[in-house]
Length: 293
Image 1: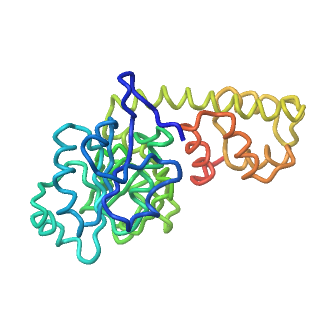
Image 2: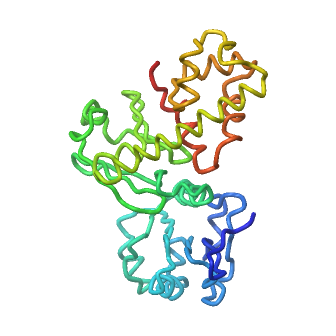
């Protein structure tokens, strides 16, 4: 993999591994720094550090220096046993609480974050989430923290209080899912509520992304030698709108896949192959979120 570099020659991002127990947390191709020397680390503008709580004393000096130099993008701390002991583990390491510390008990959180950075989608994907009282707290893959009240969003209002904590996060971080009500929520929806400036920006981005999806679907159709009027079950006017805006329901995606003689996943892969990697998770989330007609 080619690591993105800044104009001053520094590589954009990298990962420092401070122990050998987190192998499953590293996506294939992510640049890894196995020797945690300051000289080697300074080649990266954004540095991630992966460490178990037990190894914090050995990593403390390195982490503190990277934090002082504003290179530390996130510190992943794997903790075994009671998470309430983390303050004592930090004290044992003589390490102050790091603002971008992400505590985890398995490999899913760091893997989501690192994979999101590979896609340049760190501002759009979810690293982790929790419920505190009547509020949902979500951490993006940047990482940044967002809070929204369950009474601030119609979808969240539908979730009974006993079910609020019973959610799952998509493996790639594209959405949170409450199975009991089949409710899906992505980071854009949350940010649109808590940040009016982001809401306006998101609407512009969504239109731009939609046009790219639509153009990709049109490209696949043309490669099959089909006219807009030649897709069974879909009116020409409807298909023209889809290919201009990218707005499409899962049921229609299934019709398009069938018309192209493909299974849905194969059709999605064909479309995804024609769009920028940072937009691909949005296309797949169309199926995961099962929008209406």
